[in-house]
Amino acid sequence: MVVDELGRVTWQTTQTDVGSHPVQITIADNRGAEIELDYTLAVLVDLAAPHVNLAVSQNPIRIGSAVTFVVQATDDVAVETLALKVGRRCRRPRPQRPRDIHG
Image 1 (spheres, one colour):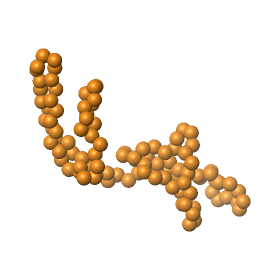
Image 2 (spheres, one colour):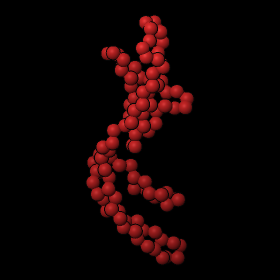
Image 3 (cartoon, helix red, strand yellow):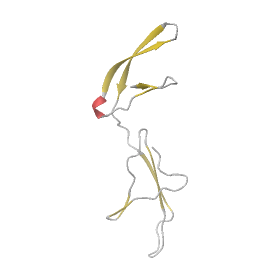
Image 4 (tube, helix red, strand yellow):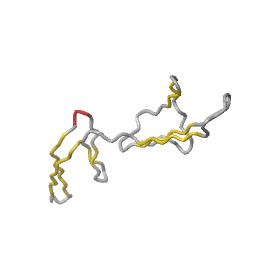
């Protein structure tokens, strides 16, 4: 854990950190007075699936015509990968402006 100059505490967790962790923060002023803050921090496994939205420019389409797919995904933690599979071919979408991939 790291405390920055604004007092924000950050900790880059990993899978091995899942569980409850006792935390104690001590705050002191320049006159020697201090206070301790104790709490328990719970590191949880991400169980929420991403939310996906797929928009198709037209359906059905004529042979030889172009079709546009807009794939958007959001997640409470992060979107790791985003891919669109058409038939047996996997196509990685190109992010549009504004960026369609959120995470």
